[in-house]
Structures are given as C-alpha cells and as structure tokens.
Amino acid sequence: MKKTILAAMLSGICSYAFAQPTTHFEIVAEQPLQVMEHFSASDAWSMHIIGKWPQEKQNQVADWLFSTENDANGKPKGIGLSLWRFNVGAGSTEQGKASQIGSPWMRTECFLQPDGNYDWNKQQGQRNFLRLAKERGVNKFLAFLNSPPVYYTQNGLATNTGRDGTLNLKEEHYEDFARFLANMIKGVEKKDGIKFDYLSPFNEPDGHWNWIGPKQEGTPATKKEIARAVRLISKEFVKEGIDTKIAICEASDYRCMFATHMTDHERGYEIQSYFSPDSVDTYLGNTPKVLRLISGHSYWTTTPLNMLRDYRRQLRDTLDKYKVDFWQTETCIMGNDEEIGGGHGFDCTMKTALYVARIIHHDIVYAGARSWQWWRAIGGDYKDGLIREYTDPDLRNGRVEDSKLMWILGNYSRFIRPGAVRMSIRTTDRKGQVIPEGDTDQKGLMCSAYRNINGQWVMVVINYADKEQNFTFHVNDSKVKSWQGYRTSDKVGEDLLPIDKLKKKQLAVIPARSVITFVSVVND
Image (cartoon, rainbow, N blue to C red; front, side, top):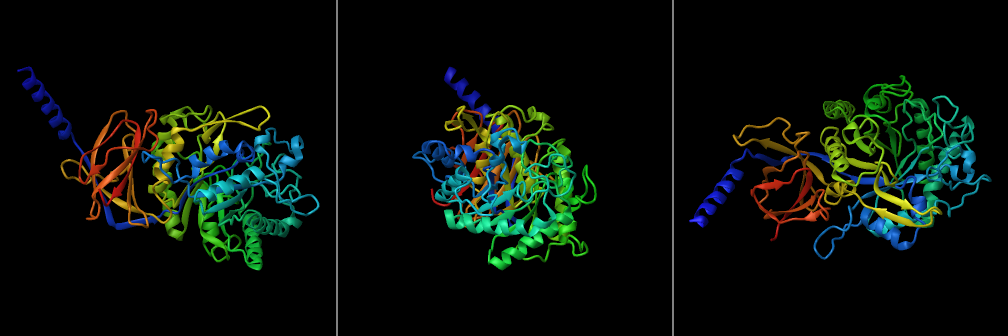
C-alpha cells in the first residue's frame, strides 16, 4: 500500500514538473546574422611578470587560457581563446619611478632604445606568452598601444600627466611613430615567428577623464590626430609590404561611438567621423590596411538594465547606417557595476561570472559584436582578471587561481570558433505564442545560437534566475541526433562540466544561476 501511494506521489510530481510553462527556442537556420571572429583577453600588466615565472606555472595559465583539448573525462582543459592581445610597451619600465607610474605592474618596456636601435629581447615575459598561445593553437594576434614610445611624447612620459586632451606625441615624431610600429611588427615576427594580424594604435583616446592621472600608460587624442596618425601608419605599412590590418579606435564608452559623452565634438560621433565620406578631415574608410570596423569598450554602459540593451541598439543602428562592423575589445567590472558590488575585490564565484555573461550576450545579440575581448587575463585583488595572481615579493614566483568568470567566458570561446555564424532564434511560450525578443530575459533565461564552419550547432543558455528553468529547443537539421551540454555553476568542479546528452526535443533543465553550452552531436 505504501509503495502504491509513493509511486502515485512520484508520478504526480513528474507530471507537475513537465506541466510547467515551458519556453521553446527554435534556431532559425535560414536567418544567419553576424560572423563571429574571435574571443580574447590581453597580456596587459601581468604577463611581463608571470611570463618569467617557473615554466610549469606559465604552462598552467596558458592551458587555462588557450587549450582546446579535453581531459580523459571529456572536460575541457581550458577556454580556448582564439585571439591574444599583446600590449606594446612605451618604455615606462626603463624610466622606473621617474615614469610617474607608481606600480611596476603597470609599467612596460619598449623595444625602441634611446639611441634609435631596437632590443628584441625586451618584453620577454609577454613574448613568452605569445609563443605559449601559438603552441596551443592560437593563430590570431593583436598588438595594441596605450602610448607612443616615451622618446616621442611631448612630456617625455608614457602617461598624460600635466597635459591637455591632445595626443601626447610631438609634431615632428608622427612619421617616426608610424615607422616604429612597422619595425615592431617586422621585428617580433623575425624574432619570435609571431605575426600580428591586427594593430590597434590608440586606446580610449576619447576618455572624458583624458588620462590626466599618472596611474598607467595612456594618452588622449582628437579624431583629427588619430586620422593623421592612421594615414601615416597605413602609408608605412604599404611601403614596407606589411599586411597587418589597422583597427580603430578602442572607444572608452559606446556613447562616444554614435554620439558625444562627457566630452566635446573633437572626440564623439566616431562611427560617422571615420566612415562617412562627408567627414573629410577624419574619413578613413578608403585608407589602405584600415578595417571597416570600429572597436569599443563595454565599460559604463552595463547598468541600469534597460540601458544595457538600449545603448547597444543605438550603437547597432549607427553601425548599420554606415555599414561598419564592430568588435567589443575591452571590459571588466567598474564602480558603476553596483549589482555585484563594484570592481574592488577579486570574485571567483558565479556572482561576477553571470553578470559578465549577461554583458557578453547583449554585446553579441544587440550590438552585433563579431569579436568579444576581456581586459586582463590575469589580475590582482580586483574584478579585472580572469585569473587571480598571488605573487611573491620578488615577483619571480607565485601561484594562480582560476575563476568562474574565466570558465563562463569559455562557455562562449571554447565552442564558438572563428567563422561561426550567429543564428536567429524564434521563441514561443507553452501556448504557442511568439515571445518578442524571447531570447533575452535579463533576470532569467538568455540564449544565443551559432553554427561553426564544420556544421556543428552551438547554443549558449544563461539562467540568471535564482531557480531552475525548463525549456526545449530545436534546429531543423536531420543530422543532429543529440546535444552535449557543458555546464558552469557555483558547484565545485562544474567548470564546463560535460553533462548527460540531451535527445532532440527533450526537455532541458538548467539549474539556477548557471550557464550551459549545448553542442550538436551527429553520431551517438
């Protein structure tokens, strides 16, 4: 009798679970969207030190960041970044305390020497990670600068201390700056066999704070100054037969890209200024080697939630009008990200990871980002690193700690490979009603779908809610037999953890505050 009652109770529970309102996601194969190019992070302010640690420590970091291999249980060893950002130094390290940059972490060496010669043994730790990335399959590299070499700057420093909002580059050194960049690209390739596919010569030149502080390398610049320098760099690349592509302009805020934000007209409306032929002084759309895309940073546009979506819609509208592509090339957690307590204090939990996953989703889905790049691969006690470093006082050794943030990025980077096409999603409720923009419930389910160049389907599902969610999904592809899921959650060991395969049209359950990437399987 007791067994009969228990069976009836269990049957009722199961029926109730399956009777709950269920969202259905349909991947619309006939509606391709943007091509995804790469996911990335940078070596800034850490790899020049970590890259000189004992080799086994370097290897662990490199495996986490770059590996696309699985262990014996099918669990990914790393997040498979497909592009690596190299910070080209300006020479503040050689200046020491005279650089006015207090932390040795934030200073960088420069290949160019005071006598005009080059030392290709400089930036050794960073160059070691170029090699480690290449060994693990990374074949795209981007070089970016925060400042011209100190020998060319107006104040003799790599930071903008005591200056106005113009480019910290002497008038007579514009062409020298272009030659330096050409020589740097050729020199690193000759020394290390690393070819830089992209060059980003300016970083946040539109920052309304204009880099007035001595904390780090950096310089403001007006649009006219950027256009002048980029044209000279282009000319030098053509002359030297360098096929590295130039990307502009790493905007500090999306609002600077389609309007003005806390600055003047010399720094705003960047999409229109660089890619509309009517902007004669600043037009770069027909400049050789310059990509028809603009790069920008997600900072300061992540809250409140309506703005997280609306700013990106405004950006996409302007990009479409001028037929310009977009890369999101830098972000981390800042003071305005109050939902997770701001930037201070490294967080290895899902609290920060989910918040960032929501940003990734919005940048890809609403801004149409073709590339998504995090700021620092390794950081300290701040929410700016995928990995936390604990360094010995002499900086020669230490230990590292991974984070759910790193693995959450892996839910995208490990499975959405270069050349994948994002696909539209049609969402319906249990009654068959289409849910407008149903791929995004900012406090619940958010999903996006992709098809890799090998035909493999990928779907990333975020559950921001505090309770588990049920849903079904489908793609009209007869070759797909099942879906392999990889889950990241706050549970120990659930870092891209392979879970039971899901049969076609089978109900999927995603636990509270977790992310699952589903990858199509054609042979069970």
